[in-house]
Length: 464
Image 1 (tube, rainbow, N blue to C red):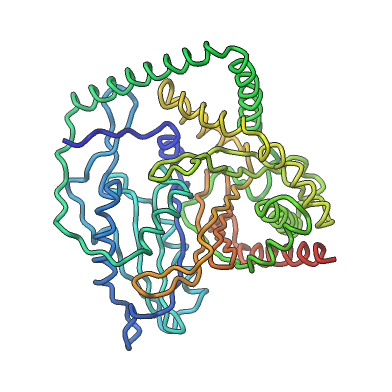
Image 2 (cartoon, rainbow, N blue to C red):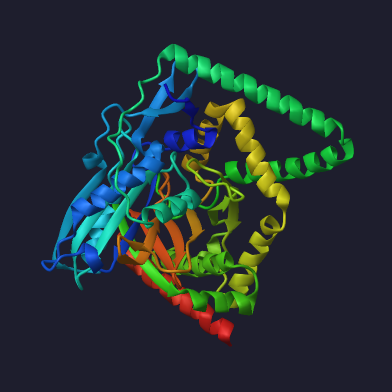
């Protein structure tokens, strides 16, 4: 029997947050040139893609595993799916030819609106042919409990690598018995207790350093808890509950123009993103009848990577709350206000240390409490929107010789959140993926226009 690997407290929290119409999978809509994968009739060589994915999975055993619960201990672990079928996860679809971007976005929204089956490995990959111009597309879905955005980029790098073929037929490991699951969990807790004792001994040898670090961590932890439990302004983007169906839209900006704004105004690329989003959100809410001036605490949840170069599956992500200046009409002043919000976290190492400490203690002491707090924060409206920005490769990638032309990411929606904004930089472009509840955001296409207008406004002001 293989080693038993448990879900972290944060991984389990993403499972707990999946309720009602809220699906907790991340994903992407990718488009490709036809290249060698598309035949003269416009059809994709699906058998070749399937064989490549099958070989790719040999390096990613987690994608053949499903979730198993440990009896009596409120823990979940990964175990091989004894009934794994690749054809369930890798699927083939087509648009009515010639398929345009509007049709593709509608199909992507429908796929993103389908919840992943908890009884199977939590991922899907759709190959979609029939695009105008001879290209094809791919829709990817992976549950957030399995991987975060940065880890997803690493997996894409493997998928878009050299062609692979499965060397041998997959033979799942026997399912662990309840006794083995309990024993492995108790053994892991004992090892963690030893590690914590060693850390305490090390801190005791340097008391002054330990006191200073503890003070910084305590201050950061208090701020995180206050932001995470205090309700923010309620808007039409925050219904009591969302439905299961999704709309998906995309926006694309030239990355060099984004960097030019950053150089002119200071800060980082993500500050340009938040300032652009703030301008667009203000326009959208004003069109919906809410003047931005009445919103004093419109809050974005901004994930922060704390992997420090560590790859692999699972979640290693912190959270930053940014109050967006929706009422600020001047784009330069809006950018300055965003910069003031984010500067503290950027220059405070204690923030990342606090996030990691909370996650590590949660894994060992109270994983169920973390899940409860996480779901409470999502349901109680402690943030209005999630905005996540994942850096991708600056060079072109290809799938079996067919060049990747664009990749628009997807961030999941929580129960009281009708809009999620995800970004991915790739090969000279910044790609926005807009995930929205079907009923609460019928004007998603107008919000996409607002993003373009807000960006143009900020770019022109920065040039001036």
